[in-house]
Image (tube, rainbow, N blue to C red; front, top):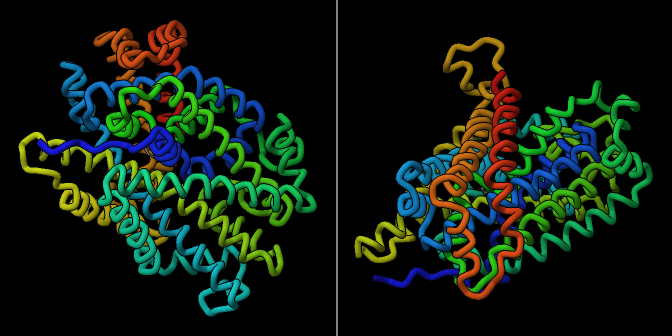
Length: 476
Ligand code: PHE
């Protein structure tokens, strides 16, 4: 059988895993959710959940992957009688997330190009239009959105075809440090704009947003908890097999506890840094601008760059490029969840490494979903899920295809996947299993007692509440 090639170094693994975690969820989701959900309170709850739930599930997934040396489907099959089907839940989630993720990735490429146009005063720049007009025009031209979406899908495909060491590791090892520097540049610019301090107040002072009329009323604590939990899961790429898959390519001598902690810390740090860039800029240059949804990234932020004067397009290019890269380093991990399973299967059947063919097939299917989301233009054209199902006054999930796939995957499948995984580890295969895997090459699992306590009681409870809150807010 052909050798299953993994990551070349721990740094490469770490950058790929952090790359998977750092994505649109950090740069777009975190800033607006933090602001609208009480700022500092949200941050605190987020961090507690990241340690007691995120870290626990992360370490579990990495250990399950490395122990079995297989992608999500193979890993669950080997490990459990009752939960053997869970890998398929992961593959399905990966498809659903990719459908809307690639569409949004395409939007980000469009905005990078737009800012290049502005830099050279070219026709494909903003031509003096406002952020809202540019976005409106873009939405009324689904063909353009589809082309950009498919470019994003193609980029993802090319990297995954290169394999773990040759594609994913190489791209992330160079790209992630660059992303970090780009983010720092944007933060410095944003926080030194006059009026930026209001963005910092909005983020950090509890109650400031309500007292200053930025939002109508503060959400209740349970809602903040559910929002922070859902955000944390999506942001850490948990509950759908991405970390199992990456863990399966990790060398036995590497320290899972340390890597798991680093991934959680770095992901949370980048999310906070993104908030430090987006919110101060919005308060300084587009105080009336939207704080959430697609318009934050594509209308408010574009207004910010248009109003920065001659340097605006340069910061626009840096910012949107960094978002494109963050999105690609996540989408490759999503596609890898799908591809790894089929490649493993082909290898086991002695058919050799059919990575290129399987990547192509998976990409074709993802392209169809991406076209559907782009053609629907956030519910403004085409047939929405609500139209299809004959629902009047639809809730978020049925309003457009982007939200539909997001609500099913992020709202139900990911927290459910993580919850079932904790049950499996705590009550079927046993926490000793994770401990043995972590300690096999002399690394100590110093947080084992904390781990065991959390995965038996704290994490499942936290996950149940998050699942309940997500279902309530997305579907009712
Ligand atoms: N973590 C990514 C983000 O924050 C999204 C993602 C979810 C990636 C699941 C892989 C798996 O945008």
